[in-house]
Image (cartoon, rainbow, N blue to C red):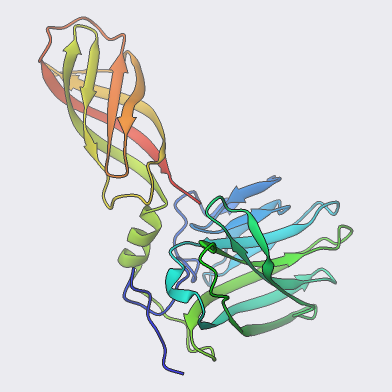
Length: 285
């Protein structure tokens, strides 16, 4: 079968950060419970510790043994895959846990699982085995399918699991090809549609005698209007640096947000300056 390409990226792999190269939230996590994002576009459930290995693999360990465990990524923009034969592949080293499976689930626009289109492949690995798992299936042509949930999981509550993952790929076709290593700048840009974190500067001005506002452009635009967290601000006005006031946002969209500082030292309206701050923008699925 001819290989198709993701029209959103121009590349064959529909998984973003399938190589586990981008870790904006940090490269080591401990003491987690419930659902948590770790490497960009990947979240875990029932996993306490996750880290980036020296060889670039994701390492995951569950220290608790009273819950299910999962390592998952959710793909959006899957209209291109409906009715197509698709191959899922991932490099797995299974170190602990007697029960393991690869699960592919379809979700609707509200992220509810569509039970009639659900696949689970059990006992895909033996302990201390490393291999590339490859599974081919046809995605149902169901226009209610808006997302694909691709995960490695374990459903024996009494097991502790330990696993290393690398090179996850979803591609059109009936066989797995070599993992597609996109340029890291492009991979980061694709991740930025879902999550961004960093420090920046924004021009701003007094809109009242004690309130400053500016407009910050989000590049690239995010997939939806994000949840925004701002912290550690300072602003430069009239050749002096200030840290007073409370930083919030006053409106945002996929492409812009408005940082705002209230309760600052009184100034005339229209006086301008520069705001420095840390930001976190979250538009994850």
